[in-house]
Image 1 (cartoon, rainbow, N blue to C red):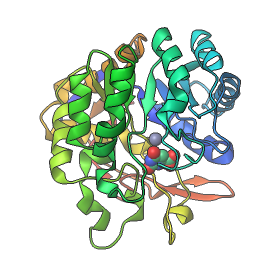
Image 2: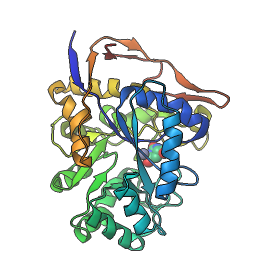
Image 3: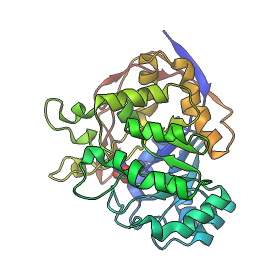
Image 4: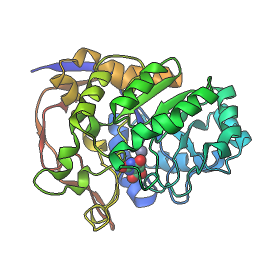
Length: 345
Ligand code: DOR
Ligand code: ZN
């Protein structure tokens, strides 16, 4: 039985929501990860340093007793964002980064950025302060094929941002294409890419395996197997510019199993199991710690976690769902299946 000991990992991309849903999901991330970058796409979105500080306190109140977990907060960029508030929040240690959602790209992105021109002053201030910009990289024009939206964003928007703000530190979140991998690598001195479990495990066939599978629907959508291959090579390469970000995105079952279902895969309870499976399949367990525990903190200029965790290749069954008392349940990645890796207590 293979065993692996590594520094406690961090998750550089999570959605916690708020209220009852938040209280149901936070313990799952906090158990497995030391820190997490918390995305700000609530309704209304978290757009200011003060709102992020208040949200951080609500999250901390949901962390189980005795669990060491630090939420790292982000602000949602809008056309009206105030550069002084954003950069002030970064200098005060309240904000770790800013998230750019192109308007209408995904869940609760209707308040997002309508044109890069509108946010130039904020980007310039962030560039000067060394504050990372986290990007949901998809164009949103209805005529662009949903499978092409990331590659088109790289060409039409991202390269322009990188050129106009040569000192800006950028994360392309949830990279799903070889074009995304290439642009991150080409700017690795000041850029990084996060990768989700589902984009490393599955290609777009999984959306239709035996019928339509709403729990595999997320944005950016799963891509062809050639892209999956490029992602797996990048994640397992050990290169510092690629690291773990689950994009765990809880939605109640009835909002996904619906005529117009929500986008998001809820992976918090089984994310490490999923990443370990990928690294084991690629014979790259020796590079797991770089991806899960070292590259992320290095990019964010934080120390790596000091505590170690041990996992072993021992199967365990995954429950069907996580209950949200009074509201319903959230279906988990690998629900009802058996996974190969388990934590050693
Ligand atoms: O699938 C997704 N779900 N992609 C996103 O970008 C947002 C997320 C969510 O918040 O539900
Ligand atoms: Zn996300």
